[in-house]
Image (cartoon, rainbow, N blue to C red):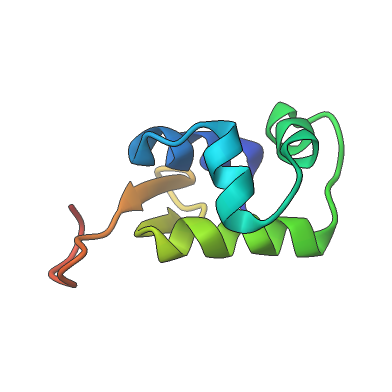
Length: 82
């Protein structure tokens, strides 16, 4: 499951505000803000909607590994990382 830090980083890569992401994921702005703050556990369906919206926009979530978790933008032409 993606983390609040990954969501904030993905939004920054895309240049999206919280409102833009909430609109694209069809979730409430309050739910997104609470999730990004890390103070509450959100519903699985909310996380899935947010992740799907970010992936659709070209974000790839990198799993935990030796270098930690992360995000990156995928080349819209399908040629690899941007």
